[in-house]
Image (tube, rainbow, N blue to C red; front, top):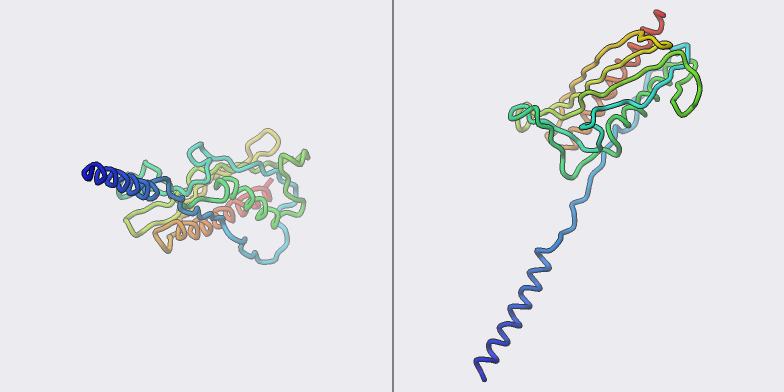
Length: 207
């Protein structure tokens, strides 16, 4: 009977070891997600509003690959045409939505008549449409990267395209990670939107 007892104890021990091992190789807790936005808006110098008529600002649009909260980067030294995303870092909302809120706030600082949205159901003779065409962290080397923000702005008066222009801003990232990218994107987005607002104010002053 001894050999049978030994075998039985061996099976029990093996089963116990399997249970313990199963606890360690089963589903593990996911790493915490870190979410980013652009931070507080930078202060603007006081001055008289330059835009004298109400402007309708629809949502900023973006291509499907950018219509997500993922933080996108590209390895220019390896395959620049293949966008990648950070695994545990993301935006609080898609970049186009972040840009929409920022653009409306920035434009309101320059407007004497106010900024309208489609939800206001109010008429405006001027529409400012912005399309986001590039929003990625670009690595030129493993430890060197910069944020690229590219937008196309269109001013529409009535049913006519009054003016259109593209803006590209590149800002170096202090660190080759998501936190470094977020800070660089914030600076690049603010600079790009400042350029859009200044351009729109100048274009409207001519019409």
